[in-house]
Image 1 (cartoon, rainbow over the protein chains, first blue to last red):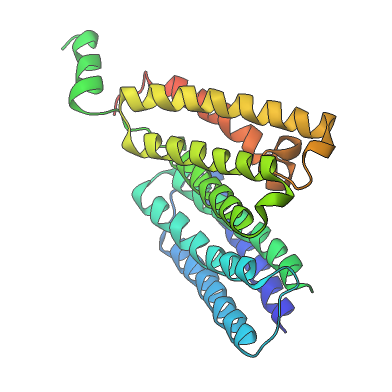
Image 2: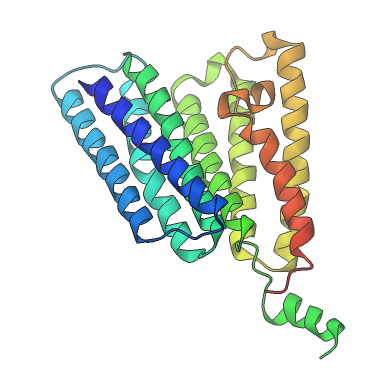
Length: 119
Length: 145
């Protein structure tokens, strides 16, 4: 179940990256719809953080250690909002590129998270 | 107003902004690398320093360098731009030396560093980042804020 959540979050992050990459390609800054997209991805990451902590509280052990697991959960949660705030300050296509990069970083974090959890 | 006066105003009154345009992407990626390198080395040094002291120390150094570059980019201005240029050059040298070192003599590194194999574990961002940062910082001088 947790693996499915990681998959959904990772795919959503890649979709967000493609969407914002498309906006950058068309020389556009991030718009309201993009921020709604970021909010959706952030909510998924937040759900993942909560579910992850609940699993830990129930006594399940990540394969590569609890500290790393929690650190990656927090990083995954903070990733897209941080990029979003930077794109608020930079109202050009480079703001869109930054959010696209944030989406790719989150997807990579999800892959690592999958390894750390152990499938 | 002559171009000379404009340059003085840029360098002394208003610090040149280094985080506009492509700079914002650089700050973001450097920020990610700061978090990655610092948290990784902090965890490894705290838990199992004896296993690969050289690798973990190098990761910590990389984290500090990334942190300093991020700070100079955010701060802006001509001095910060020069400091960032020097650090990016040092970072590039570090990536190339450590990357080559890990390939030539893997036995020196029982565990990976941030800069192992030219940063392959980090999508080659460690080697691409200083190159694009150097390019951006060289051009940023001519840009008026």
